[in-house]
Amino acid sequence: MPKRPTSILDELGIAAGNVLDAAAGAFTPTVRLGVTGLSRAGKTIFITALVDNLIEGGRLPLFSPLAEGRLIAARLAEQPDDAVPRFAYEKHLADLTGPDPRWPDSTRRISQLRLELKFSSNAWHAGFTGPQTFNLDIVDYPGEWLLDLPLLGKTFAEWSADEFAAAETPPRDALARDWLAATAAADPLAEAGEPAAEALAKAFTAYLLACRADEHALSTLPPGRFLMPGDLEGSPALTFAPLPDPDGPVRSSTLYAMLERRFEAYKSVVIRPFFRDHFARLDRQVVLVDALAALNAGPRAMADLEAALADILRAFRPGALNLVTNVFARRIDRILFAATKADHLHHTAHDRLEAILGRLVASAAARAKFAGAETRSLALAAIRATTEGTVQQDGAALPCIVGTPRAGETLEGETYDGETEIAFYPGDLPKSPDALFEAEAAGAALKFLRFVPPEPDPETPGLPHIRLDRALEFLIGDKMR
Ligand code: GDP
Image (cartoon, rainbow, N blue to C red):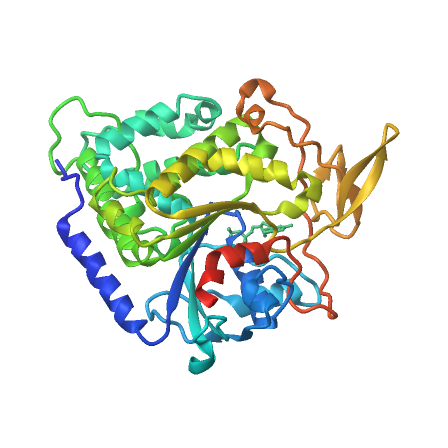
């Protein structure tokens, strides 16, 4: 049977990495900012808008170094880590600001970007030292990969049992049929063969993908690399699937033994290196949450998102799971939870969106505080694609948003062409977020459309946003005093 706890060597590896970071950063203070969130939460847009607004000295009135005229320059600098792909900032910005603006490709794997910020300090001794430099290393990675952390504490048999149990509850039960049929047809004690492993992995991945689709919008779908393989697509470490307990002794040449080995390989060659080489080196973290997509899909999706966030945020908690988590949590001292795409709502509804976010991360945030990290929740739009107005409905003036729905979006039987601007009232968010998690409340009349990106505005530098400056102030303002 495979060993459970993470070895002490892992911990030493992390400690050595941290010492190296400290040495490399000895001359220029550096903050490594992790940006995460589940697929389509808005990571790519957040980073692109943040970098653009800093470089352009754009619309950031609540970011103190800019508001106080102390930000001298922000520029892209050379990549700090040779082995990590660069965040494709220029390409993403060109997509958004070109003649025919379009949303850029989303995050598929880890990537990184270094911004060098020059500023004058407002500390009493600043006059003697002159302008200061500070490196902001932004690390973009899929939140799905954090969902893998609990797997480190499970054996193949335990993980399989959990997956089969989860597949019994709606809406998963209906989506799991083909995968469960393929599993029933496989003989765990037969001689191992690649085609059998591939067929099971394929059926299992198809099930996970169906759970994630818009109409269900489920979130707790580990192993994270099955939906976000990064560079590992098709590799043996991803070619496994749960199997029921075999009735009989497991010889090493059986399918069961092979899939169990691969599950263990996934832990050692995929999960642990990610946590050790990347996650453990972060200083600050933004967790982006697309609550609106889950709201569109209903209470089950909301409850599942809550569970996924609790799993994701376990990574920030010391102690409970294993030695490795203990080491990570010590470094991250600020975590921002951000409900993204707030431009889909009128600003009068932003308080309620923040209340929903607060409820989604409540238990997890309490744990992070326990670990010594300061946390904050904020509703924001990294890019604002709408404006605001009012519509008359049954004699009442309702606050609405005005934007151009993307081609193919539908509302009340109408399908939009991506060119037509509409005024739109998405429905009221409830006063108490709890109602959104209760199955009886299903069918609440909420509908959020997706909009095309805003047309570039040559008069104003930086992409338009909502509260990106507040986010930035919390994340790095204290480092630029
Ligand atoms: P990720 O990289 O997978 O986390 O997600 P992206 O950053 O690519 O965002 C996914 C999609 O959400 C984008 O293509 C946009 O359509 C939408 N989106 C993200 N952020 C915003 C925002 O601030 N406002 C609006 N209106 N849409 C957004």
